[in-house]
Structure formats: C-alpha cells, structure tokens
Image (spheres, rainbow, N blue to C red):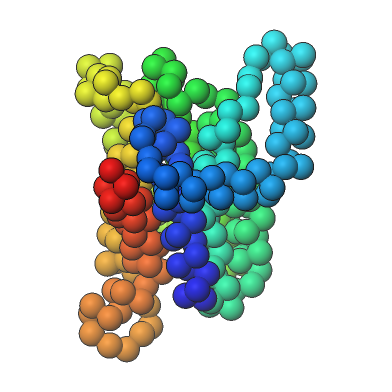
Length: 266
C-alpha cells in the first residue's frame, strides 16, 4: 500500500505544479517543462474519450438554459487532486478490510471529483470576478463526500446498541468541523479588500484555494491527535499510525514537494 501512497503523492505534486503553472503563468525550465508535457499527454490519453462527452453535455446546457459554459484544460488537474484526496479514504478502508465502504468511497469519490472538477473547469483561472468561487466548489464537493460517507458509516458500520441518528450525528459533526477548517480562509478572503492581497496575481481565486489546501491538512493532523486507534506503542507512534494523520502528512508532502519543484526549477 505504501507504493500506491507515494505514487499518489507524486501525482499530487505534478498536478499542483501544473495547476500553478496554468493559474500563475509560472516560467518553468526545460526539465520541468518536459515532465509537465508527459503529464499533460497522459491526462490527454486518460480523458480522451471522457472530455468530448462532457463538452457535449455542456453544449446541451447552453441549448436548454442559455448557459455558455466552456470546459477549460485545468479541469483535469482539479479532478486528479480531488480524486487523490477521496482515494485516501478508500485506501484506508481497504487496509482495514472494510471493502463495502471502500468500494462506495471509490465510486462516490470519482463522481464528486468529476462533477466538482468540471464545475471548476468552466471558470477561467484568470477571471478576476470569479473571486473565491473556484475555491468554494471543491469545498462543497468534499463536504458532500463526507456527509455521504457518514450516512454509509451510520447505516452499516455503527456499533451495536448505538442508534442510527446518534451515529450519524457524531459523524456529521466531524464533517462540519472539517468544513469549518476549509471555509475559514474562504470567508476571510471573501472581503474584496482582503482578496486584493492577491490582486497582482493572475488568479486570486486559485491563491485562495492555496490557503484552503493546508487548512485541510491541519484539520487531518488535528483529527489524528484526537482519533482513538487500538495500536500499541508510544503516543507519537499511535499518532503517526492514525488514518487522519497519514492523510494530513500526505497533503503536506504534496504541497512541500510542489513548492520544492518550483523553487529548484527557478
């Protein structure tokens, strides 16, 4: 499983760098440009059949509701990043042999990641008026994933003697705590004067999203410190073995790796 985990982190690093290049017009060197070229080619092959279908559906929306939506290339980066996040939950469930919820999280993650990525893909990264919207869409997707996950957990995984309402309530509270961690940066920068901090950047909305991603990592590290897992060892060993901790560290590794790549390439 550790190989899949590190492949996911590597994919996250490349996707973050590609998204930053698209949104901030980063000047990249020949080596990184070649890597991004391979990544773009792989994405083109992976989504070669799906993308025309999405464009057709957007065309139908234009005919029926007069919504002139165009699918921009960065939707693929959003899809990869969001799906990687959801897959961490499914991977954890597989590791615990909870195959039912693992399959459920995989299918649900693909659907929500696709819908939210397409929605983000209809917003231009350099559209100043988009404000925090491009950061808000993934947050909504993550929240819906969490609520759906909680419904499954309360239905099939609750402890004996615990009512469905009580189990769901406890899980839903955790979903709202994560939502709070994610939404605080968005609410802060929803003020036009505060958003103006990112004014010189081509994509202020993407910069706001750049503050949300570390907030998600902080949430998972905090949740990892609160999680109870039946593992022997020191407190530090138990903390590092918890699922939330692993997700938080994976996100930080992706952010740090992307930042390191950009710095070294400068």
